[in-house]
Length: 259
Ligand SMILES: [Zn+2]
Image (cartoon, rainbow, N blue to C red):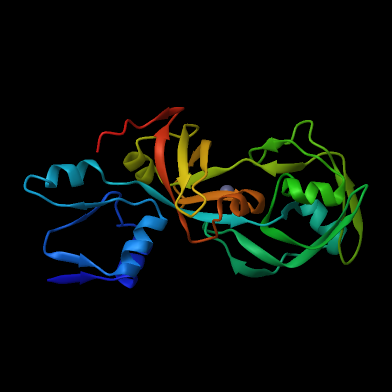
């Protein structure tokens, strides 16, 4: 008789191979901790009978790793020079999940009408547009209430003052609350049966199984699979970077439940 432990289930979850329902044969036994582990995640246990292979194939769950974005700014070359000095280049501090993207050593202070947020990370490399991404909670600290937007869509958004080591600049627009989105490669897109601009319905795999019904899909050869949310969303759903969400529907239509 094979015993399935919580540790084993955890490693399956990390590999993305933990299915719901979780299939075991009648020769398997789950430890009490392993049973709790599945129950806490709303995963049903199904003991395999004959001809269950088809059921397993049908119930293959699509999962996406979570990447939580803290408040950050993207700067243009011009703004980098204003804030840090002529000819200044950002110093990579840590690479991000998307290839070529990095968190810079440099930070700025955001100054709003009601308050200040210091040590706000700059993400590099420098872009064409300066964009400040904050959570709704940050907005209350600053006294700025930006709309929820996809990156790059800053028309009509509020501005803010940024302060760096060598200077400061006030931008007239560019502050957004980032709309949750999924990055994926063309190969992933095939597997998820979506194209750029489609929307996925995803559900947190956590003890707060919140559903995100309109997650925009961004497909690019350079992208690795990642579900990007801000800290407010992560806290509400009890998710952290490295956790997973499961895909439960597409373009407004939940998958039919017949497994
Ligand atoms: Zn992103």
